[in-house]
Length: 167
Image 1: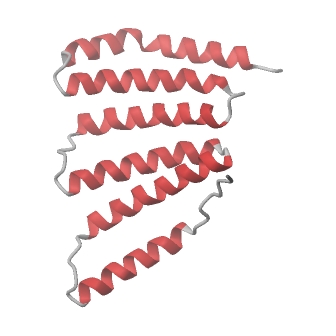
Image 2 (image 1 turned 90 degrees about the horizontal axis):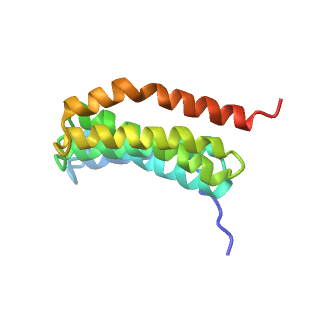
Image 3 (image 1 turned 180 degrees about the vertical axis):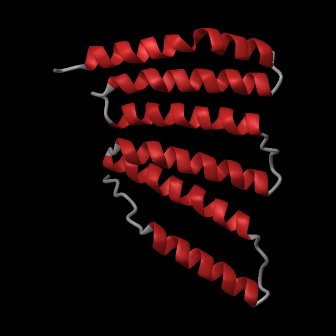
């Protein structure tokens, strides 16, 4: 079974969605707040980019698709009051999304294994900050740990780049 990527124009989807929303609003069929529509579109475009990136094995598309999808989904959930997106939750969620983006880049291009290192670093840091934000760990302990040990991430990433160097 072949998996074909969804080929769409991002601008075309935005224009259709905005026009449809405006028309339905003017006809008093439905009332949809603009912020909700925009954040839904950001998440939808991110999901399509993510799907296309996986289908086409494009590391750039999976990375940015993950970022767009996560940001759009988080803001959509905040706008619809499903979650209360505090700045701490936003930063930790974005760090986790960046980590997942790096891991997906490795997933579509297995030969570029060095993407695992920043992926794990961002996933670990984002998870630590999230645990601190949710009260599972002391925020002061998390901040102190990250302040002390963040150079380890630089060392690991530098070592991965050197190991992958083909010069």
